[in-house]
Image 1 (cartoon, rainbow, N blue to C red):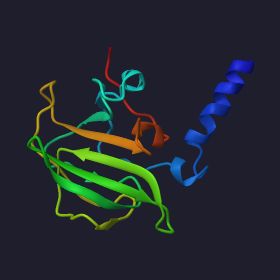
Image 2: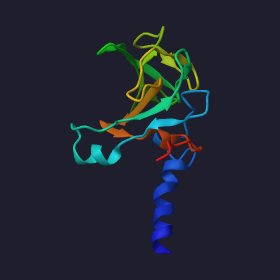
Image 3: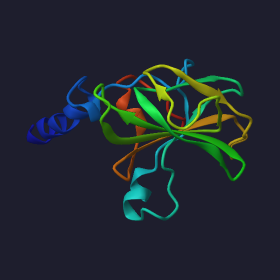
Image 4: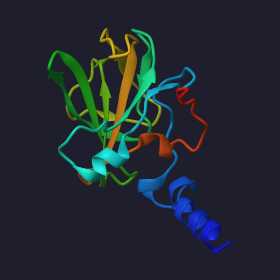
Length: 165
């Protein structure tokens, strides 16, 4: 019983709407059903921050699918790395204070430039033509909080379809 109660207390700040600006529930980055092709590899990341680990989630998508920002922020980076178009959003609270949260989206083609303000659920671009190792088109969605990578799915507070094992 104590373990269940401790687990519940540990999860409450993560999923309560409005516990703090860093724990608000986010909007979904895609309008389609969220199907995870490859999940966040938190265990590998915790063992070695610079080793092989998947620092985000790959969501099944189609080329041209619209991509939306989950919460308010400012465009921190738009560019191409290793031939992959990338958008990074620095998230801020309603007072404009940087929360230390960055989200990454790739491959995403956008018209935005660094410094553009974006609002929750605002269109930030479309999924570009880049095949995943599985041969499928995916949106890679990552979250970083103060230089620590996190699983962005924990912010949604809603069911997500995980791949079959």
